[in-house]
Length: 434
Ligand SMILES: Cc1cc2nc3c(=O)[nH]c(=O)nc-3n(C[C@H](O)[C@H](O)[C@H](O)COP(=O)(O)OP(=O)(O)OC[C@H]3O[C@@H](n4cnc5c(N)ncnc54)[C@H](O)[C@@H]3O)c2cc1C
Image (cartoon, rainbow, N blue to C red; front, side):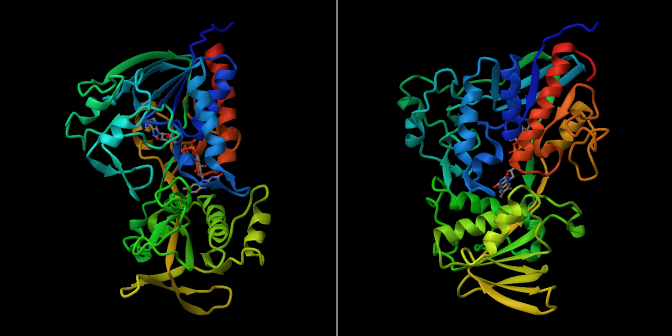
């Protein structure tokens, strides 16, 4: 008979996968510690405008789940925190968590925003990918959970203005890091991904004003984004009338060492093409691609709809050879080979969007060293039998969910998180092997 530990579960990473796993475990009555390194949970889904193929509003799906996490009595939410040390074994892990100082008291801050309005210092806004500034004291985005401000000490000049206007006395410039020690039965890693650094494909001209990434487009097209939902050219603020998408930027590309398909870029580019057309009907859109991978439920139909008369998106098969800027207009000329017709083409566009792939999260190596789990040759975490059980890592009692395991979309991340939660609960409750 195995010993009952009922220790609870540690979840590392508060994107949609970590959120879903936390909610599923909390619903079973287990104690969950959700550790997120940034000031708010939400992950990349919080930055998206709509989701393919249904064009549902991303925040409308995500925000209620984020709030549910905050309200759950079974979830201890540890944002702006990182796991420092893990020891022990399945059923009995001992974990040290570093809680970084926000310099704002989380228990007291009401999220009223007066501090930020008074702050004289601007800093790059990570959530909007630098497309607009934020203040040195900031909330990452309006729906952030927790709804607590954070002082960025890299920019703060301690002028005292925020402290002076804070009616509840939440500002504490002397706040120190704290270490929390917990014991859990099992661990789920859901630390997600980064987008491929488009600068590494120099020939695609990401340094040019009118060449942006797909994630930047998500922010531009979002009504609560930096341009109020207008997809503009960064060079002159004009609305582009001819937009090109370049697929497989950093994916399926031997030259950058990523042979894998990122699985979401075809669909997110099609989604963005449709959204641009919904905003500005008379925009011409061309998607340069090797082939379109529309493998999920409703994806092929969505692709066909994008090509139909309703949206009129043009798909050109072939890789782009090079692109260059026309200095007088800031327009971009694209040279490509159409591999269907064998023709070489040169076309001019007002805006180019790079459909960047998904790469392992920045902390993958450090987490691998901390937890001893196995990575595949691309740097994503993997189990011993990924063909049978993709949620089980190579270490007993540690599970993986979401893009940290490999590129996937939101529904697949949520499904995998549910699977990881079940497996993690078995170890947490019974201890030992699953
Ligand atoms: C441009 C673009 C458009 C997309 N559009 C769609 C779409 O329309 N539909 C769709 O289904 N999918 C879409 N996707 C894919 C979608 O974003 C992912 O499937 C989803 O975000 C995966 O969630 P996740 O929780 O695995 O990872 P993430 O969203 O990356 O979340 C991981 C979380 O872990 C945190 N973290 C990282 N390291 C640590 C650490 N060491 N300690 C603690 N916390 C850590 C991060 O801060 C983050 O909050 C799109 C992706 C991109 C790039």
